[in-house]
Image (cartoon, rainbow, N blue to C red):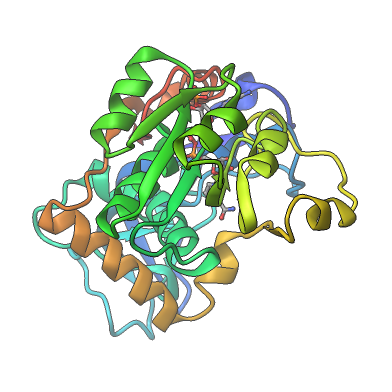
Length: 321
Ligand code: NDP
């Protein structure tokens, strides 16, 4: 089968196409023929070496496809079932081994590309809005990178709860997409974000900021919060933030700062099924639109990473094997 492999960390050019044997499932795994592979920003952190990972490795954790073979102890899935996953290392490949504990059935009517994009970013949006800061009706929140994969889903989930959403984006086209997803106010990074947020919120500031951009937005995020507001710093698309003296949280209004990660929000099968079930039910009913902004052939993985890192993409992006 064809797969993408990283032999040394670096730029997008380290993503190379290789021919490798189709793997065999262990007793608790299923072998899936991939129909679409989700590309996530975290894939670029591993590729660059920002997050360490033993080399060589096949990137990617997310995708959707059809079960081709099942392990000897698997009873919950059968050959031919449509499945998706957000935690199967080595997903940039024509065949992927998925532990049954990570596999989720794809509802009828959800296309393969949306299924391959919905889980990792959708569950992230779900835990941020339901668990990290469980936003309430009539709260106001700020979402950075509002037209990105997580950003569009988080905006829609928040708006569905009756939350007022302010977003930041870099271009007119992204502003339009973010507004279509329900953002009431769309700002630019070169606006005085905190001042604009104070204007919009009658001087109070927002209840929560969901910040996946990091270095470039962190200070504005802190300055945009109301007293006892929550900053959920969940990514670093513009780079990691510098160290912070906790005393600053006191001076800025007894703020809450957290740096959450997906794995701690899908700790067991019940929690995964709850979040994935909510996300897929919303997609199947049409209340959550998964925008797949671009499809790339598997062998064009390097181009996909280049576009993602140069902020050319909107919504989610996928590889098609
Ligand atoms: P996106 O589709 O949101 O792509 C990243 C976006 O960040 C870009 O489109 C761009 O939007 C914005 N951005 C701002 N500054 C920069 C910069 N200097 N370089 C590149 N992009 C920049 O990606 P994802 O939806 O996959 O991920 C969004 C964030 O969420 C990432 O930080 C990711 O690591 C994080 N994440 C965290 C998880 C967790 O559990 N902690 C799980 C999943 C994702 P614009 O052009 O509008 O600025």
